Length: 292
Image 1 (cartoon, rainbow, N blue to C red):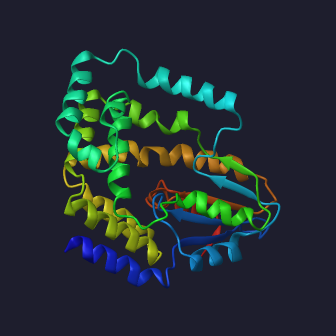
Image 2: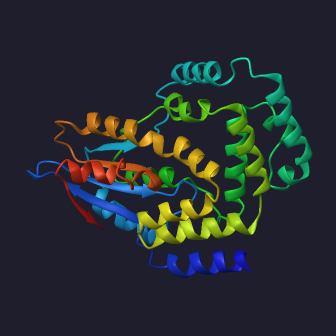
């Protein structure tokens, strides 16, 4: 029943989806930009893409993404070496064996969603837990399963926009996860597998996507709050998501300071809200915000 409700609710609203899109303008009117709160695994409709290009498809602008791709193969390799050094330092054998035991005991469930359990066991614990969570979400998404940021950038490319700037590189993005205790990492992996294909996951996804479709970033946040049922889950959500708001906002501020060109910012919708979020930054800096 929950799965049927999920399909019905998202498809019914998608025909006229609003999405989370703000136009922002500085007090003196010299700087204008777009802020798009994305759902990383949701695919936007042509209607939203048309509205996005109408408001944000300005030539010569800066396109700012939460994470932009490395500029070269050498940069990518250097970054991967940094990540390896940060996430794999002498993992205690107990936690490693705990991770493998969890994965091996759930091999059938993992293979059912297309995950290679053997390969999963070679990843850092936090990374394997997010791989499971992402695979679980992808089960219930319509095809093609395109990352929304890729989809938005492709639509800008069609009108001649090409330059991108990443607010954070992968090395910065994984810091919050790497700082988690191994007990917390093992817990997150256990919970990710336990939630595979459950009604809880389906209802959570329905709420997240429906909140995006009606353009309500606060409902996106409240959906996560309802999904994070225990105090431990709420603490881990804060550590792995919201702790990144402050450095993201600082990087954004540096990116647009004194910049006359228009900009488009694409960032996960969870980073828009709260007092530390992106919209609070623009309001505090005197920008006028209008939801498109």
